[in-house]
Length: 305
Image (cartoon, rainbow, N blue to C red; front, side, top):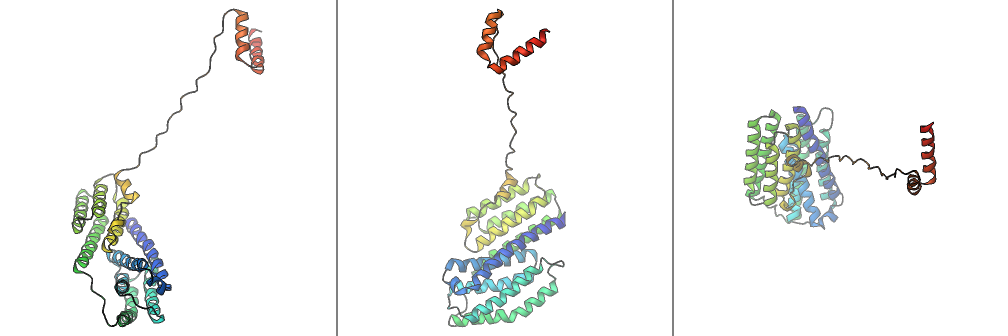
């Protein structure tokens, strides 16, 4: 069961990472056009940040470090728009190839081996150093502004809590484990307790975790995915986009099962037949058509024979 949960979580990470790779690649292919749209630049930054955070949570240090390089470079582009030239595009795309290869390796039969990741990161370091240096040159020697200490602290705390939650899910179901998971959600709430959407999501996760009908195999991928996506939005200034997924909500309030209604039996129409023969015949003539009367007559004839 543990390996099933791990595979589910890894599958979610790979699926999301590939979507983020597509976002980054589309932005880099025509970087000049991307720079003309500030929201597209923000999308590149958020995509790199999401890959970095997911890799950090799962312990993929090589992917985390490479995505972090992109996050830093996209942050420079956000704050210091520069004129794009071929050299800058080439450096970005060369670095992107490394990130893409690392994520694709996760899907190979042997997964991403640590020694392969270390080698890939080591070989890519000169490219990222050159990219960073060239960006600084393009903005007239001004280095990128550092991340605010509060944002860095929040990112570190969230990653640590998500890692701890992941470890608890791997240990197997227990009442103590559920209590610890609920407590960790409280820690996440405190990181941004004045953000309504963030608080609502975590309170929903707490109720889902506290419900013993939800086993860990069901809870782990849903809770971790929701919290990871929400933390990415929180840390990139898009907390207003945080929402509770339908899957998580269903773990708290399962959809009502539709009940099959038994149709009422059809009521057969009836007529009153007088006892006097002629009156009975008139009643039959008034109530039935010709073919029905023939059928009735045939039935009566057989009955009296």
